Image (cartoon, rainbow, N blue to C red):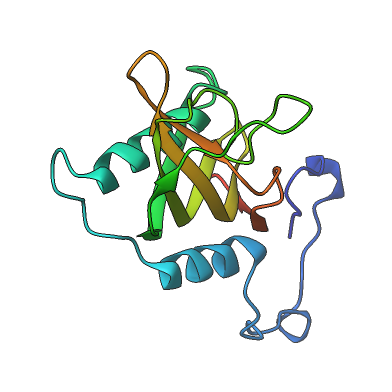
Length: 165
């Protein structure tokens, strides 16, 4: 018998009475895999639709934070685009509730999205579940932009999934 990571000098023989059948308990990796599978995934949005544009912007936000050594996968479980409204005027501090980058003539699309972000590290995948709200609009350069509205508090849960050897 040998435990992972132990030197072979610690090896020992086990009798039949010392060997137990599995108890049915799941490892944290199996539990994480089951929970993630239960989330499911949205079907791919139509090309050129606001859903596709906003999902791409949110996905790029996470991919830009990482490197080639730490690949990132973003999977959407839900997305709802709310009632459009004009870009909110700046307050006395020069900040808008819709975030930076817009002008008063800009139309803002409030977006509620649920997604998981999976980062591949050397020994494990770290998976984060988000329920986030964004204000999406075309900025003063005519490019789409999505600002998070939760102040970084959109993370619901974190999982760790061990990578196969």
